[in-house]
Length: 205
Image (cartoon, rainbow, N blue to C red; front, side, top):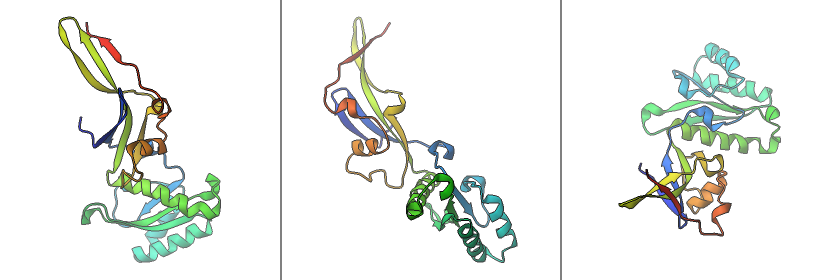
């Protein structure tokens, strides 16, 4: 497997960063709704609880611009934080226009932080939309031994919930090191900060 980057933790463990196509649901972007105007397919639409009302607004609007104005008024009256969006992807065919919104009352988000929370959620959504999703994981160097054969070493994932994270971002290096990024997204590195690990061996039959 090709890794975008690796970083040593100790003599038997490392961090590895790779691309990982994922479903939108696996990102668990709570409370976010995204409505795309004009022709669209289902992967562009992150359905929120205002989808039906926005469908009705667009149906009766003269054009996309007036639809977005009416949608903004509707969401504002409901007390939602919203942003008009123009996502550009990697080609002209990827261009999308629409509106993103967040039900801050349902999430218990203080209004003064609502747009910051919305912007962070929208960042993840657009990164997912254009395929910028990654896996960062702790791997262990395992030595396989067998009589009359040379030892083999392989890097294997630890496969525990606290040793990997799915990340959606346009900039996979927002922080100085891969370790900083892994820790930021919840990967537990505490066991590797103060000790050298034991050699792991498995005997091949």
